[in-house]
Length: 278
Length: 217
Image 1: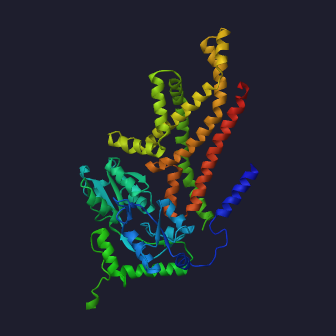
Image 2 (image 1 turned 90 degrees about the horizontal axis):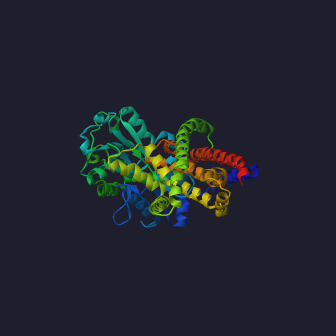
Image 3 (image 1 turned 90 degrees about the vertical axis):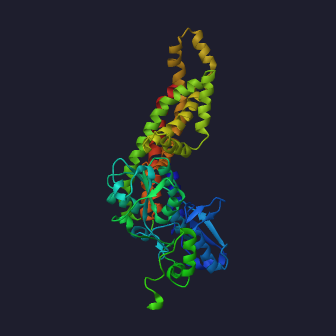
């Protein structure tokens, strides 16, 4: 028994990230040498990353990863997607299995302790979608013990539900598609999900309706960013610069194009003033 | 940074709270299956439509994934207008599946007793009840303890799947902590240790029973 425990401990320690001395090579050089980018993505969060009717992985984030591959390696197809679940995304990046993660991941202070984020590439926030037959129109009306409210088991959603909707019954599920299923099958009255995903579901389903979030913290913006293993300045700097240029610099046109293609609307403006009149 | 002691100190009480639900779910499933497996095993050992029904049930629950069964109970029954809670749905799915396994364990135990012992008992003029309670069942019970212990361990681990249907078990609590902290290693190592403790307790209990019933062999 003691022997078994000892060998288990040794095994765990050996498998522990950082236990072995890490080579100091930047992931940027690793990617260039490998001539292929490896990216962790989701497959169940339309329109950011999902499997389309033809069975292909598509979406805003998929296009973004391809653009990065194009700039890095000259070919948008030199990218391998590793589909992860939400609890597998951070270990995928921390263990070096992927070069970075592009998984509709919201920046939070707690997460930033252990994982590095680039600047955000997308403004998101909670939108609440309800069944039309429930008859409710606003988030405030949802705050009633007779309703059930499905959310992802992620801290911002849980905290917001506690603060804004203390009376409603909470249902914590682990993927956007499970939330959708819960509302479709009548398990839940409403569900909350990142705005771009909510836009998609609302457009595709006539029996669902978006609730008015006015005067609630649901109207506040959260920010999604690329995440990677901390400590690799060169790699982080490349990705952060890349996102900055996409979102508000030299590649804004591409951002606009991708945004219109997947979100079916215009992105936030490049600057909040008219550059030519400034 | 794995092995962050302050993080682990905050994590442990939360995980233990989730572990309570895991223990409740495991114990209830075990108790229900210990009883519920018996009629299924008996139905399977007689000839006729009852055996066919029991066999079909066992095939169905054993050969489909537990997660699918949970989804069917949780979302499917809700669509049919019977919205069971997550806990009740999880318990029902766990029991449905494990009753099938336990029934097969009982059947194996019964079949392992040689037919000659039945004949010998009858030849000695024992009544059916006496024959079963003094000769057959003590042997069956002693023989099914090891596979039942295995089953108990697998039940404990299977309960982790209720996290998918919104039950706040130790796995669900862990998922929430991973989401908030990005500290997957510490959290999942903590969860693994909790499951290891629970399953070790189950095998210890199995060992004790086995030792007490050793006389029957």
